[in-house]
Image: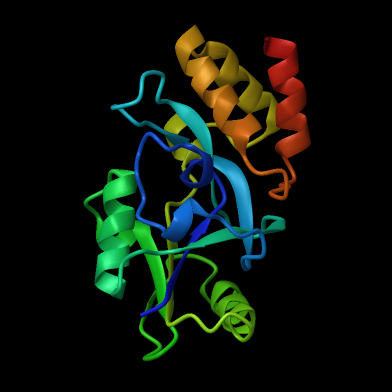
Length: 193
């Protein structure tokens, strides 16, 4: 099977947690997804692991994702590889679509994402595609709505090492990922430096 792995955040630039992809190469013409910096993530094995991360978020601006070709020859292998890289044991945290048999796991924006994947794959000819399918949790973690002011307060509250990790995540996000909050986030980072 030829399997694409979609990325838009640290999957692309953080090589400390390995993902099995062909030639360690990411291509910039992936499908478009509704993305936003809307999740507070905690990665315990990384010092300063609490940060604001990109996730699929309904009604958000769409950005063209990147993709790599998985080194795994089966959908089960590609899903397991991505689960291991993302440090999750919950299969529901990994989205996938099998173009051959139409089996899927799409947790949010199903119709929008499925339509985009089908259109995108017409010129790519993959058998399947996988992606990290974590959702927004900013409100549930902080009990405050997602806004630049509330993000500024969150970032300002972080210990220095966590702030650096959060800053690096935002600044290392590929430039083609332009969300409605991104330029404001970059302004906040300059203010808090």
